Length: 280
Image (cartoon, rainbow, N blue to C red):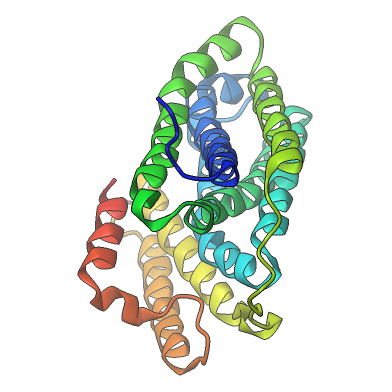
């Protein structure tokens, strides 16, 4: 199917953004099916090995909004290429990890890079593609995400079973390196005609509060497997997450350029889109 997205730059931008979405999603599903092999090889429990996946997803979830804001301030191309660098470096560190702690730390680094790819990719597409063709272009990029999620289990299982779990991360690093090379060669430069926001608008305190609240909430949910819903750690972490979310909401209401303007949730398309993504 031809990419009817207008200019050559539009087609290139869509292809590159789709590549980033593909490798970030592929890394999720590839590793998910490799977790039992990792647990056996590193002599840890399957529950502990699940942090290999959880650490990656926590990093993405906590940093998505900040990565998008950073692209506005520092430039989309710069942040996107930096995301690829973090992703590839984290993947290679995963392949060379000697214990679970090192592997989870490397996965967090990989997730930092993936957050930049996932946050900036749609912005690259919307800036490069005319409004009349934008919905189709974003649909193609979303399809690339789900192709990565779909291919991952088969490829990850084959690599882990026939070679090793390290081979899974080497494959991910190779895919990321190819994406980086293509992005460096083909991604158009940012449009510099409009003045960028200042670095102060990054709202780092808001990003920190959001990350603390989200990590606390998801760790609390994960601890229910060990302590049950009424266990002391679960209750304390859940309460702390709610307090942090409340402080984040208060900070957002008072900040001149908040990380996540809460007024967006008053718009039904945005609110229902977030609800759908959350349920997914």
